[in-house]
Amino acid sequence: MKKLNSILISGEQIKERIMGTFEVHGKMGIEYKFGEIFATDKRLIWYISYPFRLEDFEIYSYNDIENVNIQHASFTFNNNISINVKWVNYGDAEQFLKKICDLVTQTKSKKQVHCAHDNQTWEKFLLICY
Image (cartoon, rainbow, N blue to C red; front, side, top):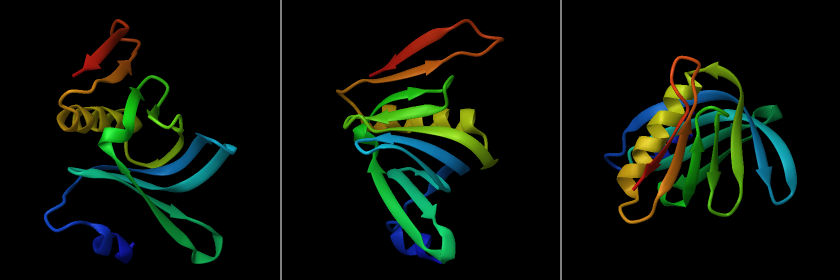
């Protein structure tokens, strides 16, 4: 994790993070990856750990996120790749996805993102953030 500090841009702050196993629906099918996703004030940084201490980072722009579904614990990028939170080891998936929705909303001034939330105590609603 020391490499994370070398990837952070000067002044970039981590707003929220989650660690666990993620299901990635991509062009090559479904993959399962273990790691940690950091929502910073500028971008998403995904630290992925593999067996034998191999590690990798994937960096995503908030402009590339088009859908955040809190009920299904997933978010989708504009290239049709979606990431579902499967098992959480650290953090709160709902709080993490709400923070992503807030950060995407702040970043996208003219584009829109769909943020859906459904909870047993709340009525189902669809929030379209501009």
